[in-house]
Image (tube, rainbow, N blue to C red; front, side, top):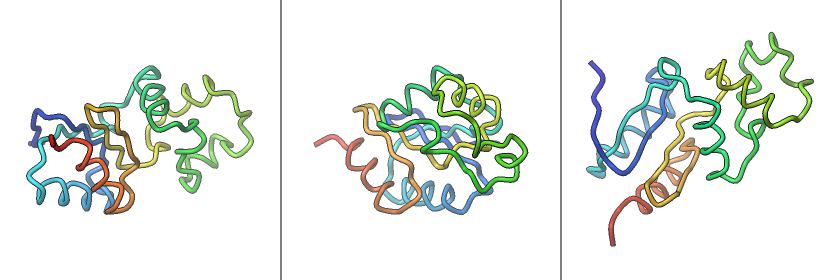
Length: 128
């Protein structure tokens, strides 16, 4: 059963991803309150993905997992840089989204691929 906690942080993960496991461990060690979203099973909508990208200040192609075989199948490298088209493709194929994604209530959003990025999200979600 998936552990879910109400909190000020949402963590988009793939449980089999080592970077996601590290992010979860760091959040647990810090005693952070967070909600886990298994985004492959519960894919983000185009609007949710768009909101996360705006918070990151990035475009969809900036967070695409281009080394995935699916990216080759979809010929993602040659897809025109049209934001809406990329959002549609990524929402329909969440495996293409970098992970873990961490969002905090204050607007801080990071791709938690490094321990420092996870700590940044923790600092943002901890009341002063």
